[in-house]
Image (cartoon, rainbow, N blue to C red):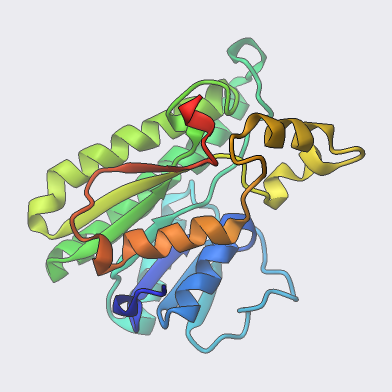
Length: 250
């Protein structure tokens, strides 16, 4: 069911060029929302919503404060308000343990995954507070709840997003803000392309270790995002919802 409360809502979404972010954008547009999308990469010419009348794109690095400022300004110029912030942009770390993680790699992963979430939130939040209503959906991971879903930097960044989301909601819930996070497991996206190369042994192993017996598609995460962003989820606060095919139940 598409939440009808998303009609004409204004969404600022990072990581829009591929994978989960692209699926989220399509879902919001299908629900009648208006979306400003941000990504470091350019949109593919074949992107299904590239020319959608309710979509605007801005290229930029989410780890830079100027990107957050410009994206917020663009959204307000186009639509006058921001109802929903979805912080999806993120990168992997190749499952590198700490002794194989350079300072540069640590900074890159933390900057994109964690600092980007903080920068966009701090730019958008004052406008939501002025409206006395706003919803933030952050992208964590099963690596934000247990070890083994990534390397040292990725796991640390996703654990931090869980804590940041909870504190964000606690600090501002009484002022009309809701903040929640999603913790995906094995989702088939371009970031996981290497797992499917050749005989796809890694992809097969992950599927076999997942109780549901398969990888999920980005659209499944997008559907959960729509629910969390809508008024149907108005009593859900500071929660991290796994979408992992049962991985964490083991």
